[in-house]
Image (cartoon, rainbow, N blue to C red; front, side, top):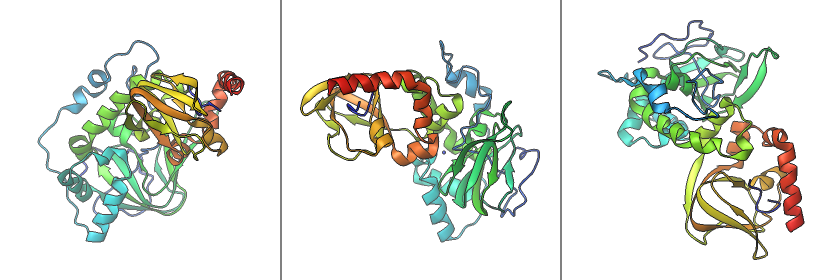
Length: 340
């Protein structure tokens, strides 16, 4: 278990059945989904399962991945619009691995969609065939549960995308999305997404799913939360002896060890070691205090990490997760306090 070093993202399919979008759409009809709403969907049963796993690639993507001849739609845009869309797309991991030609194809395929405040953009249970990137405005994602008629999930802002999971898994919307303000969205259809974007997104999910199950602090998270986390994780490699965080510095990053090992040093004294699945850096995020110790790689070490903004935006305050692990967390704090 880790600690803070010692204080250790041309429609061919049918649009969503019930069109709640009352705003205007330029170039094509559109609807909206929720990207960063990692829809609490009935995705393939073994996805991020807690036991022996079946291959996600085989189970989730089989028949849906059969590619047909494809001519991407193209909607003319001004240079300013293209520039703006590019900037928003590159804020979502799904599009950062695309080459210039692929990115251009996606940009031209996007359809401008305006919605008014309080418009229900998508409805839980509906089918969907588009994802959306927010250019302007704020949307709220919420879910109806057996105990809550409107459980708030998250708010999404400019640069956020929503709806990709319905395209990845061909599943119904598991959450509703409503405009909190007037919004300008860019909609991308299923076919373009599948042909241009889906491969890298699917690979990313497959890469992280097994690893995330091994992280102690994440074991009580549901599929919705794990999917959100998968979409925003970044990774970095540190060589033997290289500092990952430094004692006394301000901390705004949470780390998870994917491979290799690391050690925490307080005043040059080793106080903790980390292995695959361990984490550190969370207390600096919780307390807004300087790093309590230095963490160095022991041998070659690969870490996944989230900055403060991503953690807050995607998962909400980390306290919500830590509360589910209160006893374990208190044990760690006690252990570290004793060591220090």
